[in-house]
Length: 178
Picture 1 (cartoon, one colour):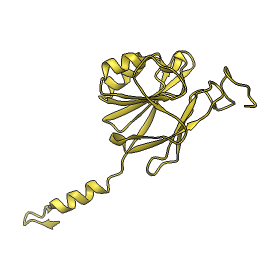
Picture 2 (cartoon, one colour):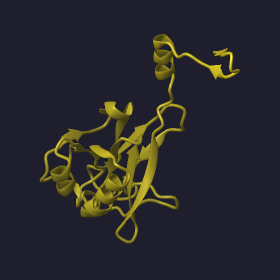
Picture 3 (cartoon, helix red, strand yellow):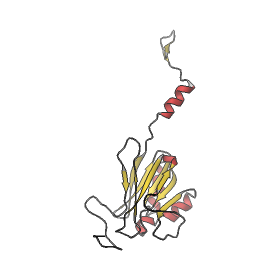
Picture 4 (tube, one colour):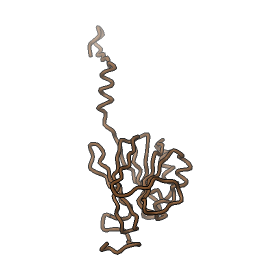
């Protein structure tokens, strides 16, 4: 920076300094809960441009949020096969054909997806996020959870209907002791 003869500060940004600034920028990723049905949430994770959703049981609220925020859907993470978690997948994939779907390997789906299970890593390069897959049978036998540790934030866990603030989800395929 320097002062001109009119006493105005002028700063010149060199190409090297610009590259340094870009390299040290924080990757601001945030989570938005989208209410669905009477008692569910669809989790939308985005950086202001690209988004992923977890368990989109209803496509309508997801498409409305993506449109309102001018976001592109990059991926869908599925925790289990119940309709209130997958009901919107086909519509979302039709609307966003480049979207990749990740779903539990031990469950069956009518939509195209990449099967995942314990210790798989789902990389969402567009958001600079990696999700480790955990097998968490109970609510359903094939139920999975996804955990990630975004830069400068506490870890995030997306566990479908396995854990809730005051308990756990219903157990359909197992017993609580299992």
